[in-house]
Image (cartoon, rainbow, N blue to C red):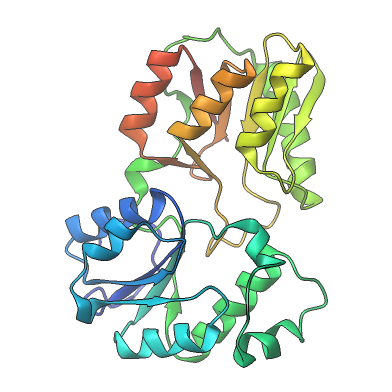
Length: 281
């Protein structure tokens, strides 16, 4: 496979199941996997996964389940003959706390968790999947060409970014990820303007407009001790639109730690909006 993110010796002739949430991310992963000749299967969630993605699979290569039905997911992986599985795309965050009717399998899992957040829930689900002999894969798999790269990814459209500015932003972002608060911060001239929490990156960016901040920089980084099987930071066209709405014209993204969904479209739209993108290590 033409990707760095698979374990050594993984059998690429066996199906890989994409467990698909919302947005463009799962479809991009399917496209890239198919381009590499990987037999792909799909597990879709009702009212979450894009219907067009589900429609792109023959009926015998996909299953649609409800959020919270862990038993159905495990059964679907078995029916589809999956050797590997990868989580791509979000589930509506509030469904992790309300509006979800868990089955007995998920209830039993939740009862074992001292904390209930995205990391512990998805980590527990991943453990259940691997008990079946299905290998959970890195959520960057097949997407090597869509990761943040070092240095300028655009011209200095929204203004140059000096090293001290990036260093300060990265320091603040790393601390937020260490505390498991969020993966993004906005800084300006040594001041923290906004911090991402449960609201998500886009809502954080849009409220920056009310702060009156100048020369604002978005910094997005992976979590401290990131489990690369899920919740990998993503940056897409919608993020750019939210930056523009919030008056944020520069972004620094962690190299190999942030997925651009999808990268050519992101770079093109950044140019149209006059937003500078750089990658940092």
